[in-house]
Amino acid sequence: MATPTPTRAVLLGLMGCGKSTVGKQLAERTGWPHLDNDTLLHDATGKSLTEMAELGVDKLHEAERKVLRRVLDMPPPLVAGAAAAVLDDDPEIAELLHKRAFPVYLHVSPETLVDRIGKDVNRPWLKPDPAAALRRMYEARDTLYRKVAAYVVDGTQPPEQIADEIYAQLPRPM
View 1 (spheres, rainbow, N blue to C red):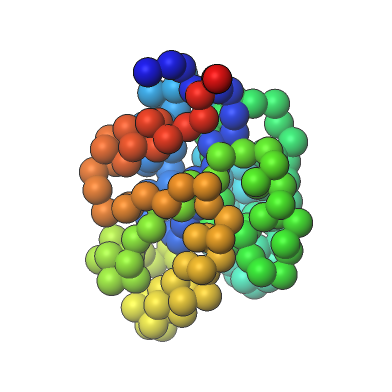
View 2: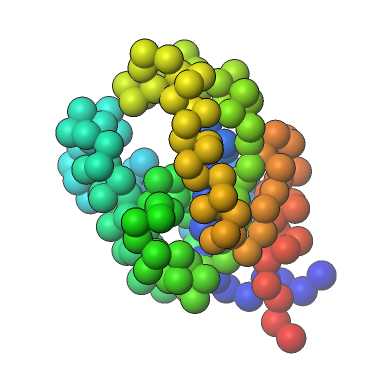
């Protein structure tokens, strides 16, 4: 198999779907740098994810969109993640993702997300009912992620297998 064409591989999905873990695995396979979304958000705002959440979900999503725009302006190749940056109120983000990246949706059911992160006290936006919050987020975003993604992968597989599957789908030179 030919080496993938240098691109920006952007992993999409809800918190807990595996963007950071799979992103690191994909970066190992490609040799491309991995840019962790939470780290980029902290670097851009000087605040932790929890501190950003305390400012309100709108401020958090606004900061995430700004970070994604910066990632899409960086020279390829790279691997990055995006959670709430892909929202219906900013269709320009979807267009930029299609033009400047290979967006991949790590699909995970709300039930699996609850199992993975439902008791995470560092995610205040899930309180008081993590299962209900994750279901609402899933219902609001699943269609958007699918619309934006160039590829959808089952995020319940082992991270190594997911990274292998994404690697096989990355654009190759003609």
